[in-house]
Amino acid sequence: MGLIGETIDSIKSIQIRQLLTQAISLGMIVTSALIIWKALMCVTGSESPVVVVLSGSMEPGFKRGDILFLRMSKDPIRAGEIVVFNVDGRDIPIVHRVIKVHERENTGEVDVLTKGDNNYGDDRLLYAEGQQWLHRHHIMGRAVGFLPYVGWVTIIMTEKPIIKYILIGALGLLVITSKD
Image (cartoon, one colour):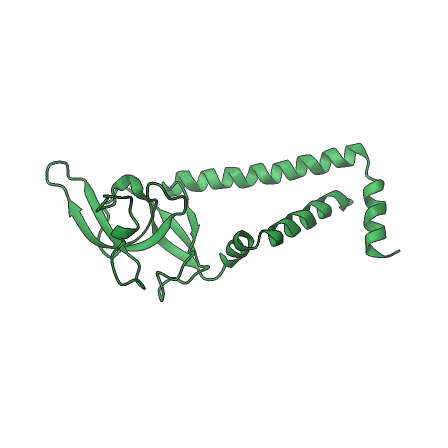
Protein backbone atom coordinates (compact mmCIF):
# COMPACT_ATOMS: atom_id res chain seq x y z
CA MET A 1 0.00 0.00 0.00
CA GLY A 2 2.93 2.28 0.46
CA LEU A 3 3.89 5.01 2.89
CA ILE A 4 0.61 6.95 2.62
CA GLY A 5 -1.49 3.84 3.24
CA GLU A 6 0.61 2.90 6.27
CA THR A 7 0.29 6.46 7.62
CA ILE A 8 -3.51 6.40 7.25
CA ASP A 9 -3.69 2.98 8.95
CA SER A 10 -1.46 4.29 11.73
CA ILE A 11 -3.76 7.30 12.29
CA LYS A 12 -6.84 5.04 12.37
CA SER A 13 -5.29 2.77 14.99
CA ILE A 14 -4.46 5.57 17.43
CA GLN A 15 -6.07 5.12 20.80
CA ILE A 16 -7.28 7.98 22.99
CA ARG A 17 -4.64 7.31 25.61
CA GLN A 18 -1.85 7.42 23.01
CA LEU A 19 -3.29 10.63 21.53
CA LEU A 20 -3.40 12.28 24.97
CA THR A 21 0.17 11.19 25.69
CA GLN A 22 1.38 12.71 22.43
CA ALA A 23 -0.59 15.94 23.02
CA ILE A 24 0.92 16.27 26.51
CA SER A 25 4.42 15.62 25.13
CA LEU A 26 3.93 18.31 22.51
CA GLY A 27 2.64 20.70 25.19
CA MET A 28 5.70 20.01 27.33
CA ILE A 29 8.04 20.73 24.41
CA VAL A 30 6.32 24.06 23.70
CA THR A 31 6.30 24.97 27.40
CA SER A 32 10.00 24.09 27.73
CA ALA A 33 10.85 26.34 24.78
CA LEU A 34 8.95 29.23 26.37
CA ILE A 35 10.65 28.69 29.72
CA ILE A 36 14.08 28.65 28.06
CA TRP A 37 13.23 31.89 26.19
CA LYS A 38 12.08 33.62 29.41
CA ALA A 39 15.21 32.42 31.23
CA LEU A 40 17.38 33.85 28.45
CA MET A 41 15.51 37.14 28.79
CA CYS A 42 16.29 37.25 32.51
CA VAL A 43 19.96 36.26 32.11
CA THR A 44 20.71 38.67 29.24
CA GLY A 45 18.54 41.57 30.40
CA SER A 46 17.17 41.87 26.87
CA GLU A 47 13.53 41.57 25.80
CA SER A 48 14.75 39.65 22.75
CA PRO A 49 18.01 37.81 23.48
CA VAL A 50 18.31 36.43 19.92
CA VAL A 51 17.58 38.26 16.63
CA VAL A 52 18.07 37.52 12.94
CA VAL A 53 19.75 40.05 10.65
CA LEU A 54 17.14 40.73 7.97
CA SER A 55 18.96 43.07 5.59
CA GLY A 56 22.41 43.72 4.17
CA SER A 57 22.82 47.06 5.95
CA MET A 58 25.52 45.71 8.30
CA GLU A 59 27.67 43.95 5.69
CA PRO A 60 30.46 42.96 5.65
CA GLY A 61 30.35 42.45 9.44
CA PHE A 62 26.98 40.75 9.60
CA LYS A 63 25.20 39.29 6.63
CA ARG A 64 21.52 38.68 6.03
CA GLY A 65 20.57 35.49 7.86
CA ASP A 66 23.10 35.76 10.69
CA ILE A 67 21.76 35.25 14.20
CA LEU A 68 22.88 37.78 16.81
CA PHE A 69 22.97 37.16 20.56
CA LEU A 70 22.10 40.23 22.59
CA ARG A 71 22.80 41.41 26.10
CA MET A 72 21.63 44.56 27.82
CA SER A 73 23.44 45.96 30.84
CA LYS A 74 23.44 49.18 32.81
CA ASP A 75 26.78 50.21 31.29
CA PRO A 76 26.56 53.30 29.10
CA ILE A 77 26.31 52.73 25.38
CA ARG A 78 29.42 53.82 23.50
CA ALA A 79 30.18 54.73 19.89
CA GLY A 80 31.21 51.70 17.87
CA GLU A 81 28.94 49.23 19.63
CA ILE A 82 26.40 47.29 17.59
CA VAL A 83 22.92 47.63 19.02
CA VAL A 84 19.47 46.33 18.17
CA PHE A 85 16.73 48.90 18.56
CA ASN A 86 13.02 49.39 18.04
CA VAL A 87 11.61 52.55 16.54
CA ASP A 88 8.17 53.83 17.52
CA GLY A 89 5.69 52.78 14.83
CA ARG A 90 7.78 49.88 13.49
CA ASP A 91 7.45 46.23 14.47
CA ILE A 92 10.78 44.90 13.22
CA PRO A 93 13.94 45.63 15.24
CA ILE A 94 16.95 47.13 13.45
CA VAL A 95 20.61 46.08 13.86
CA HIS A 96 23.04 49.00 13.41
CA ARG A 97 26.20 50.51 14.84
CA VAL A 98 26.27 53.48 17.24
CA ILE A 99 28.14 56.33 15.55
CA LYS A 100 27.49 59.20 17.98
CA VAL A 101 26.69 59.41 21.66
CA HIS A 102 25.17 62.47 23.30
CA GLU A 103 25.19 62.61 27.09
CA ARG A 104 22.74 65.02 28.67
CA GLU A 105 24.49 67.13 31.28
CA ASN A 106 21.50 67.59 33.59
CA THR A 107 20.44 63.91 33.82
CA GLY A 108 23.46 61.94 32.63
CA GLU A 109 21.22 59.97 30.26
CA VAL A 110 22.74 58.94 26.96
CA ASP A 111 21.14 59.44 23.54
CA VAL A 112 22.62 57.67 20.52
CA LEU A 113 22.70 58.01 16.74
CA THR A 114 23.07 54.86 14.66
CA LYS A 115 24.05 53.89 11.13
CA GLY A 116 24.26 50.66 9.16
CA ASP A 117 27.85 49.85 8.16
CA ASN A 118 26.75 49.40 4.54
CA ASN A 119 24.55 52.55 4.45
CA TYR A 120 25.63 56.00 3.29
CA GLY A 121 23.87 58.12 5.89
CA ASP A 122 22.82 57.89 9.50
CA ASP A 123 19.48 56.41 10.62
CA ARG A 124 17.54 59.60 11.32
CA LEU A 125 15.27 58.81 8.37
CA LEU A 126 14.41 55.47 10.00
CA TYR A 127 13.51 57.00 13.35
CA ALA A 128 10.01 58.21 14.17
CA GLU A 129 9.00 61.55 12.68
CA GLY A 130 10.80 64.40 14.43
CA GLN A 131 13.09 62.05 16.36
CA GLN A 132 16.80 62.86 16.10
CA TRP A 133 18.28 60.44 18.66
CA LEU A 134 17.54 57.02 20.12
CA HIS A 135 16.92 56.88 23.85
CA ARG A 136 17.74 54.01 26.18
CA HIS A 137 14.20 52.60 26.03
CA HIS A 138 14.55 52.12 22.25
CA ILE A 139 17.62 49.88 22.64
CA MET A 140 16.81 46.16 22.95
CA GLY A 141 20.38 45.02 23.46
CA ARG A 142 24.00 45.00 22.37
CA ALA A 143 25.36 42.33 20.05
CA VAL A 144 27.73 40.05 21.97
CA GLY A 145 28.01 37.14 19.52
CA PHE A 146 26.64 35.70 16.32
CA LEU A 147 26.07 32.53 14.31
CA PRO A 148 26.43 32.98 10.56
CA TYR A 149 23.64 31.86 8.20
CA VAL A 150 21.55 30.00 10.82
CA GLY A 151 18.79 32.62 10.64
CA TRP A 152 18.02 31.78 7.01
CA VAL A 153 15.51 29.22 8.27
CA THR A 154 13.50 32.03 9.86
CA ILE A 155 13.81 34.28 6.80
CA ILE A 156 12.65 31.54 4.41
CA MET A 157 9.68 30.62 6.59
CA THR A 158 8.69 34.30 6.86
CA GLU A 159 9.06 35.08 3.16
CA LYS A 160 7.53 31.78 1.94
CA PRO A 161 4.72 30.88 4.38
CA ILE A 162 3.80 27.72 2.47
CA ILE A 163 7.11 26.17 3.59
CA LYS A 164 6.23 26.96 7.21
CA TYR A 165 2.81 25.30 6.86
CA ILE A 166 4.28 22.21 5.17
CA LEU A 167 6.89 21.90 7.92
CA ILE A 168 4.32 22.30 10.71
CA GLY A 169 2.00 19.81 9.00
CA ALA A 170 4.80 17.27 8.58
CA LEU A 171 5.87 17.63 12.22
CA GLY A 172 2.24 17.31 13.38
CA LEU A 173 1.81 14.17 11.27
CA LEU A 174 5.04 12.78 12.70
CA VAL A 175 3.81 13.38 16.26
CA ILE A 176 0.43 11.79 15.57
CA THR A 177 1.83 8.70 13.88
CA SER A 178 4.75 8.00 16.20
CA LYS A 179 4.33 4.71 18.08
CA ASP A 180 6.26 5.62 21.25
